[in-house]
Amino acid sequence: MIPARFRPPVDGRPGAAMREAFARDGFLIVEGFASAAECEALVRRAERLIETLDRPRAVFDTKRQSHADDAWFRESGDKVRLFAEIDGQNVNKIGHALHLLDPEFAAFSSETRWMRYAAALGLARPLAIQSMVIVKGPRIGGEVDWHQDATFLSTEPSSVIGLWLALEDADRSNGCMRAIPGAHRGPLRRRFRRAGDRLTMEETSDRPWPDTAAIELEAPRGTLIALHGHLPHMSPTNVSNRRRLAYALHLVDEQAHYREDNWLPYPGRAARGEGIG
Ligand SMILES: O=C(O)CCC(=O)C(=O)O
Image 1 (tube, rainbow, N blue to C red):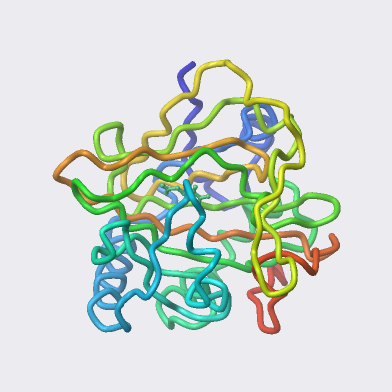
Image 2 (cartoon, rainbow, N blue to C red):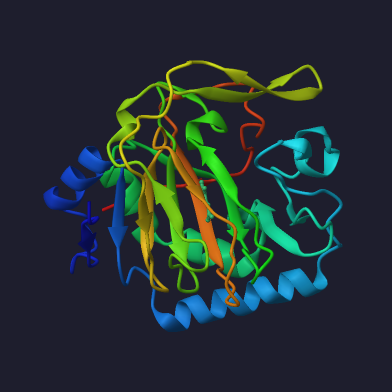
């Protein structure tokens, strides 16, 4: 399958064809969502954060979830912190409150254009609750294992949507995302939740991922990929000489019940999608 690709609508409001693609495939690809200059400015900002923030004190490992045992991770929901690749040195990502605390990412994230996608794709009251820069450095950027975003951000009913933006070209050689089209219609397989002062991963369904082929979601710089909360997706190790920087913003519906045992405590301050006109 060749994924459908869209351009931003002239009036900024995602139309029926985009909504249908998202409902059918579980993702939506919009090329040219952000300009080259906007991406460049955010790349520079991310590089500055990598240079100036405290060194990472936890490895981010999506296979073993070993970061679940680190307070550095558990307490990062309302902070901007660096996380390391498994070598313990190189930066794997920056998280998880850039949209609230970093002036440049906050200004960009609060623009109405994001909220319009979240609203068009089903969130009655979009609430941005988590953000991260995914670094994927050349020859080191680690694999992000198969997952559904609702594993990490659970509401009743399920509502999370990921808005992922390519700040640099993402292609098959530098570890672009893979997804199984249509597989968002399946159940949530796992939940990552707080149990006392620990974080645990629990199986919620033993249904295997469908054996339909995964496809590559190549994304030139400036491309937005919206991901349904139940869509299985992953990204392989970056084996190329080119970095692959991306910004991901995760939103839930404020009208849904946010589960108290999510790893990320419900935000006191949050970027609300108010005034979408
Ligand atoms: O950028 C990536 O490699 C993976 C991002 C991802 O899985 C997510 O934002 O949920």
